[in-house]
Image 1 (cartoon, rainbow, N blue to C red):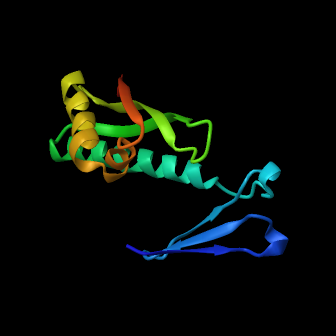
Image 2: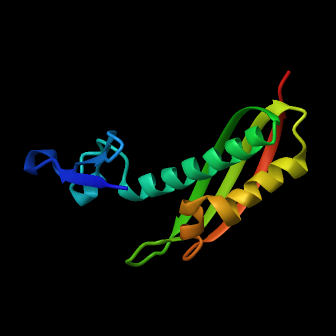
Length: 142
């Protein structure tokens, strides 16, 4: 895996463009009080978003492989950070909303648990410094 992060220069404040080995790019920026112009995600927001994406990916993949009728999944993450530098994540709560037909709570819970303990590299890495908690709701598709 490769990534290049490039500062956009003095005129851009604290804006950076990250270009990945898979050919995608994303803008990151800092808060105005830190010299940024609020043009993109904060780097730590990107870490949090990537962690959520990693886990949601796993949950959908596990449910689909089990031939469960899942049609949507979103996960909201709320994180707390240390008050002093380095301001690492100390707690991250994942709330999943999984939509489908006749999804069973134990099956969804198991998919989330497998993501948490076996498959989601990002959340497993975050668990080294942060307490990770999860809950979920199932939305029955009409």
